[in-house]
View 1 (tube, rainbow, N blue to C red):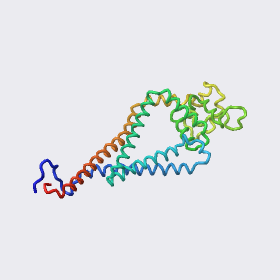
View 2: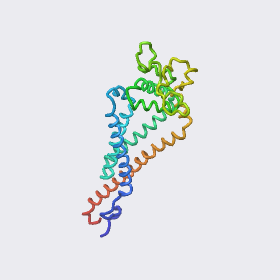
View 3: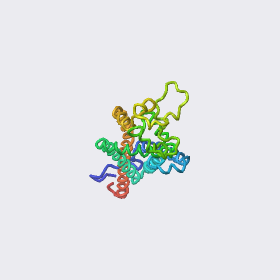
View 4: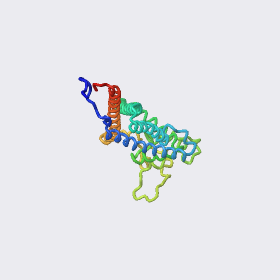
Length: 282
């Protein structure tokens, strides 16, 4: 039968604008990060349950809480992507794309603001480090994180080794009954060559010494300056990490938008076929 002039080209009933490659690539892409998010939540919950109740005093810098929050958000986001791509649901796909775009823009804005307002960012880092020093003995994970950082960057405290006086156990006040009074953690100590056993008491009484005397045993420089110097000397590495985080997000946004457009075209085709099925000129 002749087709009406000006009518769109007819497609077979089995024709679909939705590309299976795009659809299942987006599905497995989200499935991978969905599994990763569940592992993150499981590890975070396990770490949280294994902690003493006193650790609740320092939730702001608790790695376990951070892991749980990031894992839950990633779980919800990738769930929308998985189900949306598998069921060809435009609402879920647009939600996934919008949320991923917001996350990407927030990361971009944070990077730009951190670069432009470097002094304020430095002040915020200093505040976080000082808060971590105060709660050093309250949270085992936080303690291990600080010890790792001080050994990695060969530093002690935020600005200097005397910052450890902010901690109630290391405070130098005369009324402090702690055996660690006026001391610093062992991670501040300069490692001794061929040391078989770690001397965890090497920082005893170091805050009472001046810089010159203390520098013979411990690192006296603070971690903030060391961290800033490390960032300046590893800009290419940090840029590569940032790019590695951005690429999966951009790929997810691109694939979801392509799939949404294909689904919309498929819906238009189905509506067109239904409207013109009884048309004698169709």
